[in-house]
Image (cartoon, rainbow, N blue to C red):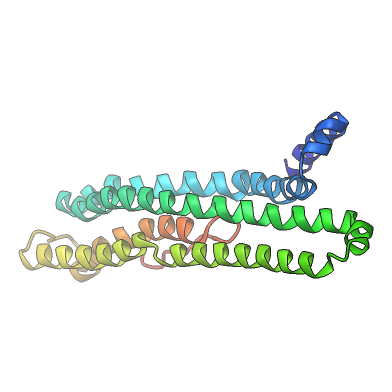
Length: 226
């Protein structure tokens, strides 16, 4: 996929007129030909697989919990609602920063490529120091944008909701067990632990998918699967 998209991009660039290449910054073109094409590959593999898996694991607790007790649907249902709103706010805040990271990286490449292409002009006009200072400002801009993106990713609210769901699901399951509403054949304590594990098993995958991002998230084993 990445190879085919890159080939199509190169063919398209070769077919552009000289006016287009004179108006289009070289660094921006280089950035789009490398990073943007690579991100398209991540979107399909493993991005598409992770999205489908996340949706599946969000729905499974609602389908399986009634087999133990209908009341156990409460914790996964509350988490799904809160998860959607928290994830929407998280992605909205992250979009502006990621756009700034991409723009600053493109400006950094563009200025560097133009300076190297016109190195004779730069030296002839004694602008080496000015170019070094301008490059340093571009590097600082890219660094600040990357640090801000890291700060937003560190404040991933669904992770807090995940821990709260584990605690709430365990408390709810224990209260049902104490009330005698989970009287099942076999080991009752094991069944209560399994019931409390519903939020943990499937929701954990969704949290890791959105927190770590495509290309870095692998399947998380659910050792406490009932």
